[in-house]
Length: 74
Image (cartoon, rainbow, N blue to C red; front, side):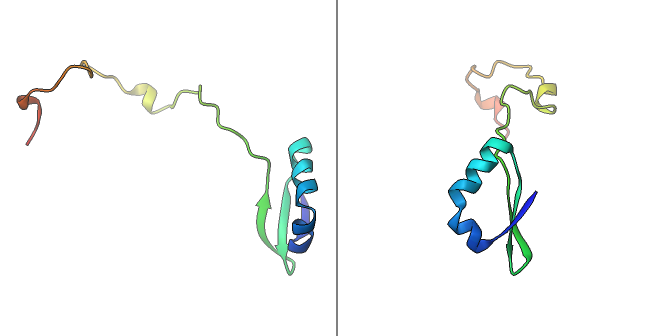
């Protein structure tokens, strides 16, 4: 984890992003020595992992069948 100030971040942003991309290094951006933000490598979520809650849902009807007036609770 590296700490850098805002001015250095602005002047070296491309190099910092390249370092994050290659090494996965985390940068803490500081203003007057106080941490303001973190720069971290973006991790995409894997879309093929099933959701734990939704995988328990059971559908007991044909969702493509049109509804009748009796099916609507008005």
